[in-house]
Length: 112
Length: 111
Image 1 (cartoon, rainbow over the protein chains, first blue to last red):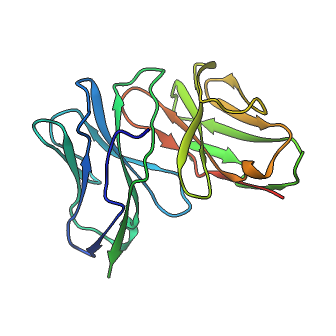
Image 2: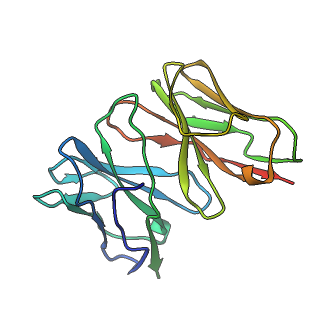
Image 3: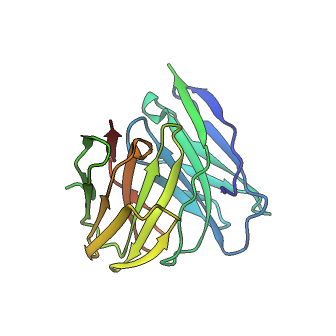
């Protein structure tokens, strides 16, 4: 079972920041927070991951609370192409036995 | 160059047939995976291989047999196809902590 809780859907105006929340209250010390998204009919796409510090890359920012029980993915200037299902995943640090367990994610709709 | 490529993209076949889906990655990753996405859009892991060795087998029926001839390839062979096997199958690869790279999927329809 997925170890995260996300709202089933959200919407955001184009050009605004999209803030997607995720609850992972049972996260353990060696588990990372990963975000992926799946645009319609495509394979899932890796976005970002972090352990406890906030992270930023060219796609998004990841804010992890100090107690690590929740996080927020921020898309700073959402475009129509950001419409997708976004998955928040917790997973142990890389080993050959690591595996992503997908939940139901958040369906993000960007409105013009 | 496509990082993780799957063939075919679409596959329509009759019940009882045997079919294969091929996956290749050119990223130099050690680990490869097969995921199944059903009609309700849930993504579930089926198998993972690390350097040609089977690591994860998520109680998938014996009709599904993965084969990894080398660490860049992970093929999926399915015997005696059933209607319930209809789904989109995704191949993925990973290395270290950098996240998985997924292929574009193979849509299998069993009629």
